[in-house]
Amino acid sequence: MLRLHCLCLSLIFLMAGLARDYSVARQTRIDNQRVNPIDGAEMVFIPPGAFVMGSDAAELDQIWRKFNWPQSWKQHTLSEQPAHQVRVDGFRMYRWNITVAQYRKYSEATKRAMPPAPSWGWDDNYPIVNVSWEDAKAYCQWAGGRLPYEAEWEYAARGGNTGLNGRARTVFVWGDDYPKSKAANLADTSFKRAKVYQPNYYLFENYDDGYTYASPVGAFPPNGFGLYDMAGNVLQWCEDWYDRDYYRSSPAANPRGPSRGELRVLRGGAFDTIPAITRISRRLGNRPEIHHDEKGFRCVQQL
Ligand SMILES: [Ca+2]
Image (cartoon, rainbow, N blue to C red; front, side, top):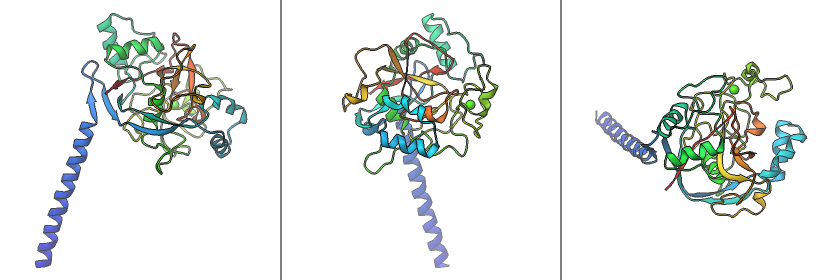
């Protein structure tokens, strides 16, 4: 009887402890997120910290060997070399890409026209696309924020896997291997149904995420910071000018990109990109005035 009594008491204490832990965890989560009253976007606190940005040649060789990717693709990786340590201040990042509903609200408030609709039409919970870098920048300013700098974007995409202090880095947002379950909206076998698809396009064979084009924001698992779609779905504009050689001379703290250029940085891959282009380190650049149905954005707020 005494033993049963002790067991019951232990259970009560255990449950009280669990409840307290849960409450602390919940409180932390609430403190770490905030809603922007202007556009209703949920923002995640990204703590200040250091990480290893970019890739080294030996690391790329290893990745190429592992996945048996064509050597000709490696020429596109020069801009992500060398790997280098970067420190960034804390900031808040939008949990999801800007949605069609949010952009419509902005469009009505500022009397700016909506961009041309993509082939799949406008759906409220889908990411806005067909926005230029200039459109994206103007939206973030209206919402009281700005576009993320490229270093902030990569740090956030790594979700705490910094490559420092015993923490490994991963090749992709979802890990180091091809995903065993649906991990991101990529150029999968569903992409064969796209009107733009041609037989010579590269596809991620044996992977079907179910989406031919873009997918609703948050349709795939979040990363370690609770950010969605940091791989695939639509490319994300960053604030920085793109310069292939920037990493050779970029500052170690809060890099802001070159002072001038012709292209602006895009990150994250899209529904029409294969895993090689959806690696976290992969950099792309495009002219700031162009818009396309694979390009969208999210904003950040300085603390
Ligand atoms: Ca897809």
